[in-house]
Structures are given as structure tokens and as C-alpha cells.
Image 1 (cartoon, rainbow, N blue to C red):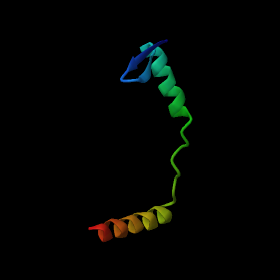
Image 2: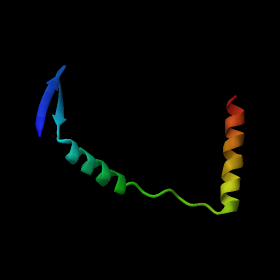
Image 3: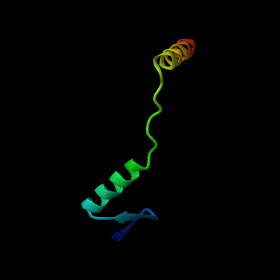
Image 4: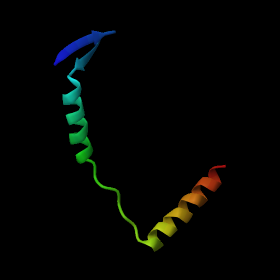
Length: 56
């Protein structure tokens, strides 16, 4: 791991393989998307459509 300074900002340079491992590790920590029932999804969709329509 090397550090690089550009415009008074420090950057870290790591090998590509380590970077990819960090991405995989970070992605596994994100919570999964919430699943909705059909009725809940329909209500949410109509709510969002109304919200978007009011913005225009």
C-alpha cells in the first residue's frame, strides 16, 4: 500500500485484487432490499406516481 499526495490530499494506492476484495466485503454488508406484498407494492407505486405528478 502506497500513499500519494496530490493538491494537499492524501490518496492510498492498493493492488487491484485487494480493491476487488474490499468491494465484495462492502457489498455483503449492505442490507437486502425490503420485499413487499402485492398490495403493499401497489400502494407504494400509486403513492410515488402521485408524488412525481405533483412535482411537474
